[in-house]
Length: 94
Length: 180
Image 1 (cartoon, each protein chain N blue to C red):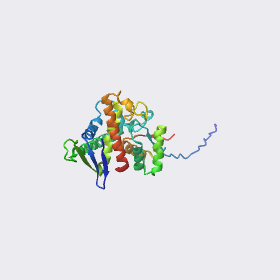
Image 2: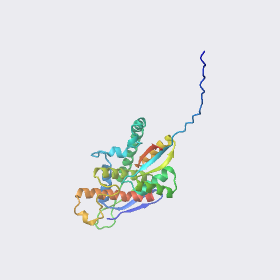
Image 3: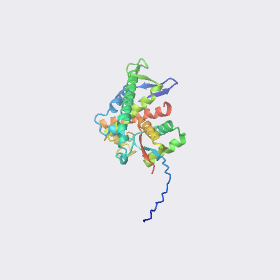
Image 4: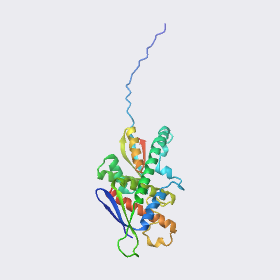
């Protein structure tokens, strides 16, 4: 009689965390630097110094990640930025 | 040619405007038009994701076109409407009895229209930039109107475009600093 081997099963709990999304502002040659800084402050509530830093990053490096978090919120921020005529997109964090 | 901008708690006031200032501002609505501007829609209503993610996020992109783009189209058009309606209220003011002196205008803009003004002038500059390729290199205006020696060589139509572009930017800078 063959021996029946019961395979050992291992259960691993799977914890699914939402991948964070990031909101990116892209540089364009038309929008005024003072305006980009103003919009960042207005939408994200950042202090003037931080908004200025992010704006300069957009200007010098071509893009800046201005916010990271849940996708739905990221979509909301991109819509707000585009409604102020800034070039903005959302993308998954690497 | 000078122009004064003032702000009080209720309104913005532009004084000492000459006919050319008003003409330039009236042209901003045409400048903000998508006609003869391939690429204009893409600039004002871009997708919410970068080129590389377009395929993967097809559903979001479609929803965006249907809901967000149409909302933005209405918003931007309504802002230009507010801007034009304020311009219609420009008042002619004669400062002296000298009939030779050029006619001047005064314009009162309700404070809550500041954003609509900024948006209209921004739409105009964004589309002028595309229509006339003003920035051949990123961050570099093709011909600076302050470079005296280049003015003579410049195509007069293009020079007028550059003047409007700079004039709108000047008003926008003031709006950001004092009115938004």
